[in-house]
Amino acid sequence: MHHLIMSTLIAVVGAVAIGGHASASLLFMDEFTHADTDNYDAIDQDSSQSGSLAGAIELRASRALFGITDNQASWPQTSEGRIRFHEQTGPGTAAGRYDFSGDLAGGSLLRVEWNVNWDETTDWTAFNFGSIGITSGEPGILVNNGATDVGILFRKNSDGVQVFDNGSLTLDEVSIPYTRTGTGRVRVDVAYDGVSDGDALTVNAWVDDVQVVSNLGGFAWNDLVAEGGINLEFEQRNGPSRIDNLSISLIPEPSSVALCGLLGMLGLAGRLRSRWG
Image (cartoon, rainbow, N blue to C red; front, side, top):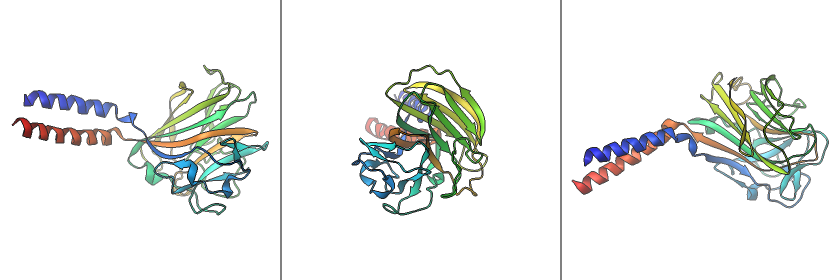
């Protein structure tokens, strides 16, 4: 009987290890559920934010102010605009960029998701991983800037997805297998080997559960010390534009998940042995 119990437990632990990537931990999410405003920087954001970093992060506009329209982040201007993640200090005040390095340590995959309203323009919605850390004097566009370790954009009129590696175009997908109408959900997964300079990155991406980027490698974190750590940044080109439910999640290393599963199973085995003698 004991041999049967242990065999079963080993099989279960193996399954836990294999499926370790399935469980994501929410670091930060903003649902933008506020009264309409033309300046999100100036209001108290806490009520619409959740996740383990909700009390540590504030969103700040870059290049163009963004506001709230019908419980969505909105850009009325015809110019580039970004959302940066800053250390929380309170409405209308300036603070340093939030460094995600410590939060990503021990993980293996970073997931970013947001809802976007599609339209018939060649403008785009994008996200930057490992971007430049300055808070003033930034370039107009960062997604294809040489300081951005991974920049990925999704054109709003079905013209494709583009992925940039420190400014170099790595993927230019002009034919994508989905039709963009109304509101869609964008998801980008960046798997990483570590949180130091040179650690490798691999990119996957989906739109409404249709995969549009598959296991695209060759990326790495670069110049993290000079940039103040791992900076993340949402970006969009030309308004009017809206997004909603911007979230960042972390998936732990499979070994960590397996270890937790193993400890739990060993505890269960001990209880069963005590019970059955």
